[in-house]
Image (cartoon, rainbow, N blue to C red; front, side, top):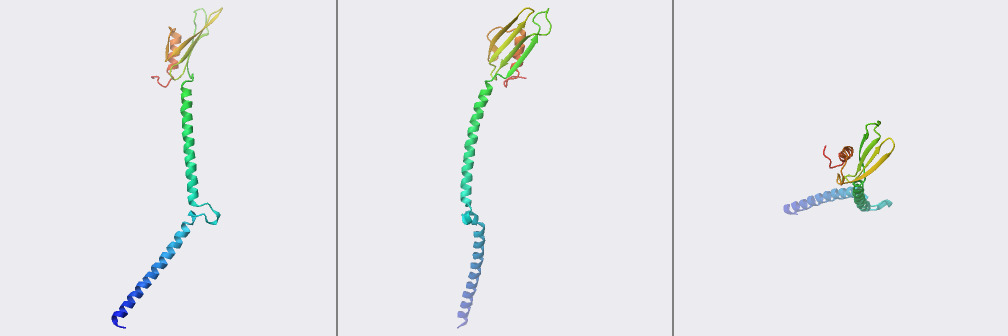
Length: 164
């Protein structure tokens, strides 16, 4: 062996040792990765990670559908609530000077759009009379008494489009 051959053998040996060390390091790292990602497969009778993620994605999609359905129901319910008579204005008064106790009254009952009616009952000593007047868009087609006008204004002040 000559000096050049000897140097070549040492160089090849060094490369082999380095390659062996790198191979061992990669083997150890691969073993660690296998342990860390063992969850991904269905070993030991457990559900695989991929299967769990797929199942959860299906559950999220089902929840989105449920939320969309509930949103539609809420919109329908809100539409019904807007048309429900829920704004009330009440004015009690003495229709006649000789009677006390404010037994007469006018009550306005309207929805969010100002549609509804005014119910007026006038009490006298010997009789009572009741009147109903239709309200559309916050307006009456017939003339309103001052008490009916006040009751309607009070009810309309409660509607969403009312000015304070």
